[in-house]
Length: 196
Image (cartoon, rainbow, N blue to C red; front, side, top):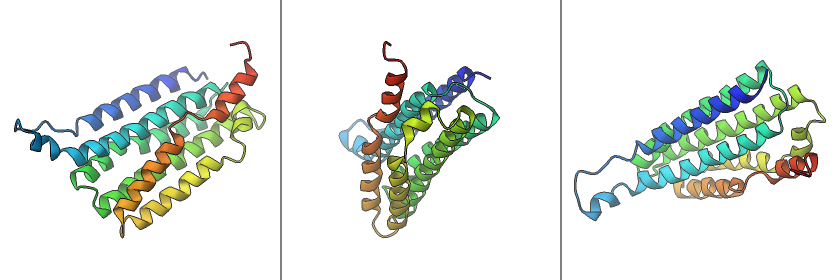
C-alpha cells in the first residue's frame, strides 16, 4: 500500500477545512470601518485557526516523508486526525462569534487537544508500520514538544472558565512552538539523503 493516496486525500481535506473557516467571515452590510471592526473577533479566531491548520499540514507533510509504508492502522489513524481537524472551523467560528467567551474558548481548546492526541497516535501507527529503527522513530526521541503541547492544552481548557484571555495566550504560545517545521524530522531526512 503506498502513501500517495493518503497524502493526496489529507491535502484535499485540509484545503477544504481552511476554505470552510474563511467562509465564517461574513461580509458586512455596511460600508464603514466600524462594520469591519465588529468582525475582528471572528477574524482573529480565523487567523489563529488558519495557523494551526497550516502547522498540521506542514508537519503532516514532513511526517509522510519519513514513511516508507502504510497499512490499515496508519490510514485509520490519519482519518482520526482529519476528523478532529475538521471540527476546528466550528469551534473557531463559535469562539469568534462569542468574542472569546469562556465556554467557546474551552471547547476550542478541546478541539486543539484532540488533533494533538490524534497526531501522536498517527506517529505511533507509522512507527509500528515502519519499525522501531525507522526514520520517524529516530527523529522523535522523547517527543518533549508533543508532550508539553498536550499539557498546555489541558491547562488552557481548565483555566478558560476563569480566565479565557489566559487560555488564548497559551493557544498562541503552543502555535509559536510549532510554527517552525519539526527540525528533528528534517535532520533525520538530511542524514538519510545527504546529497539531495
